[in-house]
Length: 145
Ligand SMILES: [Zn+2]
Image 1 (cartoon, protein in one colour):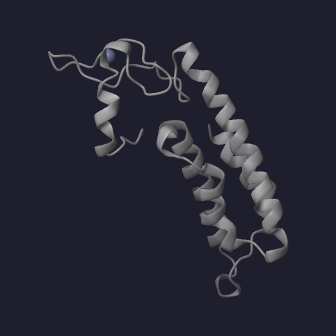
Image 2 (image 1 turned 180 degrees about the vertical axis):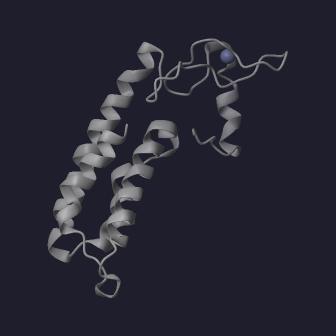
């Protein structure tokens, strides 16, 4: 998945403004790269609760770019996040997530073991556990390692 965040970073790296007081270290470059990675990671693991990925990432990193580059920054972000999103949307059909792990229903069985059935792409639960998707808005999403 990191090829998408690295592509955004590579496209924009030349325009990142560093604070003149921190010459020698690329603090802002580091921040931009981390923000891109976080956005792509969230897209991969938490897509249903990530309504405006491009907007969110743009707001996170726009401060590190000069005024003249803002429009281009937004366009680059939109382009690559759209590509990443498209890539991710095709994944559930082959039964693996973006990291190559087999997809499983997010519920546990009555015995307490993870449900092994294939989840539906839109909510991550198998047909018999779909009702759980309605109550889960209250839970915090699990972050994949
Ligand atoms: Zn299930």
